[in-house]
Structures are given as structure tokens and as C-alpha cells.
Amino acid sequence: MGKVAFFFLPRAARESLRSKLYGVAGSSDYLNVHNPILKATFLKAIREDIANAARSVTTPTLLIWGARDITTPLSEGKRLQKLISGSKLEVIEGAGHFVYQERPKEVADLIQRFPLS
Image 1 (cartoon, helix red, strand yellow):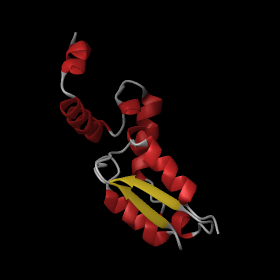
Image 2 (tube, one colour):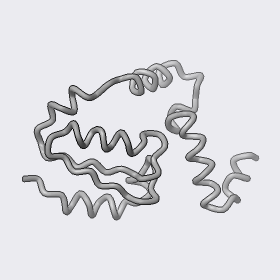
Image 3 (tube, rainbow, N blue to C red):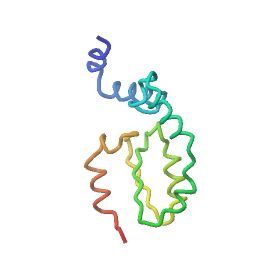
Image 4 (tube, rainbow, N blue to C red):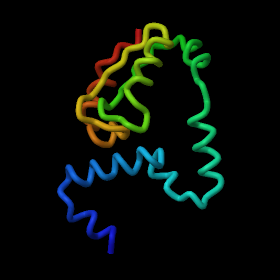
């Protein structure tokens, strides 16, 4: 019943509610708190510092971020861009964490235009 009511909300209200819920849970896959494997994976992922790995990247790297990503904020994208030598950060205004689902055409266009050399 609650799920049906959710779909009758205006899209903006649904997205706002979903963003807040995902912000608390981390991602929809982790909403099942009774699954110890997902919970352990989630906790490991959010605690891992990838700075050293990022510094070691030597291939052309395109980072695409949603400006409204509250799960992995834009500040993390900016941090990665500084750590990955020669990387490029593209920010899609109005998009959230699942930018590739929310704005697939814009993401595809950015990837196609990205120079690999």
C-alpha cells in the first residue's frame, strides 16, 4: 500500500524523498539491513580511503558527477579530480547519485567527447 502511494506523489516529491532515504541508507541495495553481507560490504566501502589508488591512476580519466549527489557529494569528485593526475571532472547540474540513470544522454555525450589521449 505504501509503495503504491509513493508512485502517486509528484516526480519532484518522489525524487526528494528517494534522495533523503538513500542519503540515510547509502544506496537502495543497502536498504535491507538484515543482509549481513550487504551491510559488511557497505561499511567497508564507506570506510576505505582510495587516495593512494587514485594517485596511481595514469590513464586518461573522466569523472562524471551529479551536482545534487548527497550519497557521494561533489566534494569527493573534486578531491578525486585533484588526486588523479590529468583527470577531468564533469558535473551535471540537477543530477543526483545515479547520474547515469537520471541523465543517460548527457553522460553518453560526455563520454563520447572525452579525449583518450
